[in-house]
Length: 457
Image (cartoon, rainbow, N blue to C red; front, side, top):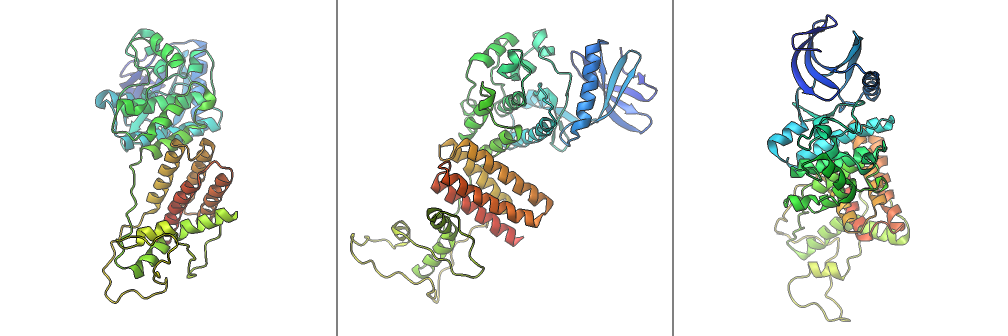
């Protein structure tokens, strides 16, 4: 059995124990050849199954090669045993962090879950299902990034599920189908990630229990708690996101880990209130409102006509119909004209402003990130209150993710195409009666804010 101070294969000196499991122990080791520290995962047993699983883990890690997955350097088989040489992640695992902090700030949880989801989506794209996502298998480096580890050897009966220790092991995060003995597809990782997210937000896994058997029965038969029932400061939208990830039926869960992470991030984003437009005189009020409403009016007219209109040429005056509701907002205090009466003439759009207008209050224009975040938040809230179907939400998130990727790569033509695709998606889902008309208008305003922010860059 390996011990501190041993030098493996005349190269790797074991210096510290980083963790122990039922099949292996992980050491901090110093590579005397390359002069760097690594993690050495050493099998404690010599069974053929353990060795086969270690080899499978090495191949899996090599195939994924993702920044949020702990990298493998080598696998060494010697003396009837074997060990993996892995990238060393300086930091701690999420289990240790939760043991110390209890629960984490919402924005921290959203970021860690997004990192883990990115790793899982990469694995799923290669046909790999982790099957043992839990806080102990999410390492957090010194920069605050989450890294997924322990692919390949995780099994149903891990340490915590068999030793009677406090429920922190796999059973606390296992999907019902796994508990029925099925291997499960990528949906089991989505379930586990949702369970981890719930614990990170509230300090407890879905079904805290004194024994693995009680926890397993709860996963099978009980409804999980809403996050807000445990933590009142969370936004209500997060409940639907987490609970969908914890559905008993795999087909009812989020389609991917990334879709879950995107919805979680949007649901946890702080509510953004748009600043009200302030005007000083009727002459400039109508102009200001017309400019502010041009995108919504254009979307309104085009959707009712049957297609989204193209943006007008630069400098072209917008055509806006201001209805009674807008006139009521603009009108000075006093009674409205009686129905059928002729209202007082309104100032022309082209009328000159008063010679000494009072300055209007201005708000800081939204940034690109602001516009995207607000779009996501309104999508999640729209789905939560029934104005948007789940299918439409998932496609809109895919469109936004593609736009974000194009922005990160600085691909101008692709950015323009993605913005156009986003608007076409709004039209598509409105026509299919899967997106409420008024929500489509709100979302188009965010797209306009995005375009304006891009133009300022």
